[in-house]
Amino acid sequence: MAPTISSLGLDKLSREERLAIAQDLWDSVAAEGLSQLSNERKDELLRRSEDVDRDPDDGVTWEEVQAKARALYRS
Image (cartoon, rainbow, N blue to C red; front, side, top):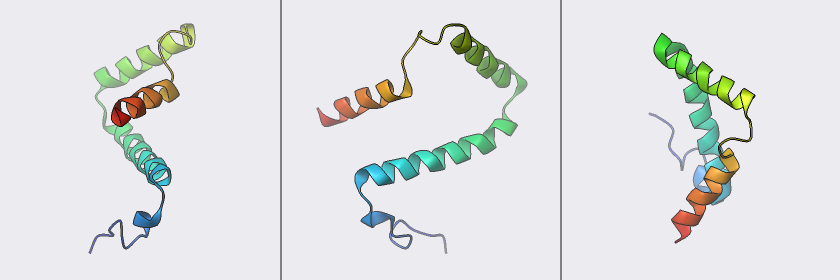
């Protein structure tokens, strides 16, 4: 049987702790998926990475995205 939130004791963690674990899980799945990307998608990710390297102040940080999402959630 697959582990559950309760069987792993995750239901006893705070909301912030569960969100951090969810992010870690997502990151681990995403990292495995990179090897399965098409060349076109890999090229696009490389292009975007190079854009950030050229102008790191263009765009918003992940922290800003999270803060905006949390503010919207609270509304």
